[in-house]
Amino acid sequence: MVGLKKLSVVLLILLGIGLIISGAIAEETYVGSDYSGESHRSLSYLPVQGQPPKEVPENSDVVYIAVYADGKLKDAIAEALSRVVQSRGLKPVLVEDYREYDLKGRLVVAFFPVEGTKKDPLSREVWLSGVLYYSYPGDAKSIFNSTLRYSLSKSTIDDYASRICQTSEKRAVEEGFKENECGVAYWWNLKAKVGTLTDGDPYELIAEEISSALANMLASK
Image 1 (cartoon, rainbow, N blue to C red):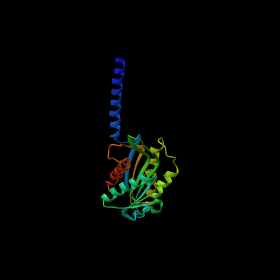
Image 2 (cartoon, rainbow, N blue to C red):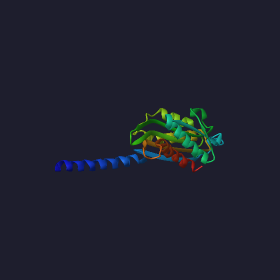
Image 3 (cartoon, one colour):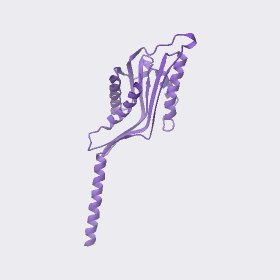
Image 4 (tube, rainbow, N blue to C red):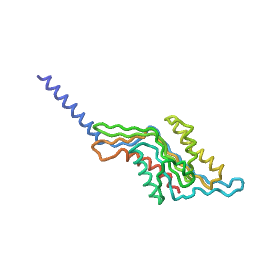
């Protein structure tokens, strides 16, 4: 009889601990990544072979935004990026194929080919991997050509991000851009987790993390 009472007490204690842990998870909010980085490069160039520098983009007040992600992630990221652009007094224009807008205006490309979601009774999770690219002259060719050379993975994403701006700078020198500004941020397994007892939205948390990188890139110009 005494043994049964002790067993009941132990079970009650374990149940209580389980409830506490479950409650903590249900109230949890988390944003983080396994691997991330950001670089921002700004250079001015001398005229090529005595020719006057090329003034680009055609309209620096317009920012073309292309988002490559699925469903709710695409909508949340596009909305967050547009808000940042508007907060700088610029005009965001969402496009499907950024290649059509080479040097037309500033360019932002959010490229996230790896993503996933998970939902259970205690929490909701969203994760993705990819890059955010910003180009003041609107250099669409460089990110397109760089993307063709890489199969994105955790081991290649750093080199891929660096190569984009290197390619952009090379083009700027060859074509004599008056100035070139390139920014790239990258994340591998950027994850947002929100407990079911909170009001947070994991899609919005992911989007805010990405848009904050764009805010940093736009701060200098």
